Length: 501
Ligand code: ATP
Ligand code: MG
Image (cartoon, rainbow, N blue to C red):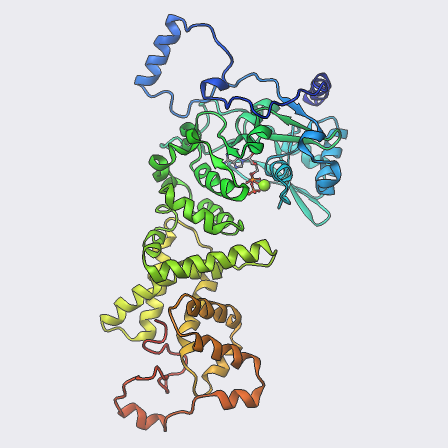
């Protein structure tokens, strides 16, 4: 492929490493374009027409011809042994076949920032079909954005072909959101269509050089998250970039550049047009980033939380709900940072629990039977999220299992506790109960009892059980007040009034 040979020779021409001034002037929007002579009359008229007819909507930043900075190992610090061997190998194979190929995006950014990358992306001049031909264990995926998954050992790498900058001809929805992005282009154009300057870095494992078109290394060192191009236009093309801004700033400890931050508040509503499945993926990334507390706090500050979890703002305004959600996020962050697994079902169950409690109360007050009311409340809450956030069916099942166990923890007599600990979701349900106790929603004693009950042998368990109060038939006729929160016998598995709240 000609691009490959051309790429190599141009890389050679730049091998004289340009030093990067780490204190360069931040590029203003105009600063991204090369110096120009005063505009001609026609240019002024064209500009006016564009403004009047809003032709500037979804118009591209004119591709800027910039010489990339080639940054040496001493400055960026990514020796080849620091990247995953699979990423190096994929680049080697592609380069060996005459294509350009680099580790790109988040992995380069994270390595420079001293963070272990969680995945590796490779950008190449080879088309998806050409990549497929080189790797037996690979497949082309994606519609909006066709890429190749290359399996190398136990690793899966995403290999994407250099994309052309948006030229205003891309298919968009009525709000300017780009629906397809499959026009291939040069490496320079590929850099220009990435979102933030720190994400437009290309690492060449063959010579340990970073190619930097947009001063990304300098921005990273100056702790600034800067959008490439016009931020409002880039958010319009893809509103998810607003969430990415918040997540990446939190993860990397960067400040969102004021120009990139300013439009977010008024453009937040564009998130409503993003397909629910994509929003869910991004939300999950955010919650499992290890910086969820920071992200959620920042989302609220930017006014972005409304569109995501429509009820999150309500939850965060109730003192108990807020305490519970924040506690859950803190624990999640801690687990992620310790490399422990986190269940998305558990997480969403905590985020929405106080909504369930509210809905359950309302239904009970309206005279519904407790158990029916709980299951209906669970559906109410999940349905309310469904339009915006495509919580997958499997995760919704996990969430419901955890919620449904909660009232059963209030019952400590008969055989019921023995059945509860046999439930496959007992552990998650118990962790959830513990969190409710820690947030002050229920007594710690209840969680302590279950912890002990789960850990002792059969005889001790029997001793711990609260005795049944007389035969069931008699009890049914009697009107009792559930004064001590003791369970109602007789309807096994049914939630106890007051048990869950
Ligand atoms: P992380 O892997 O930590 O979530 P990342 O930046 O690597 O962060 P990916 O989704 O893996 O995120 O994307 C890889 C690269 O693709 C990014 O670094 C960026 O260059 C580009 N990219 C991803 N999403 C977008 C987007 N919405 N708009 C423009 N470029 C994007
Ligand atoms: Mg990535």
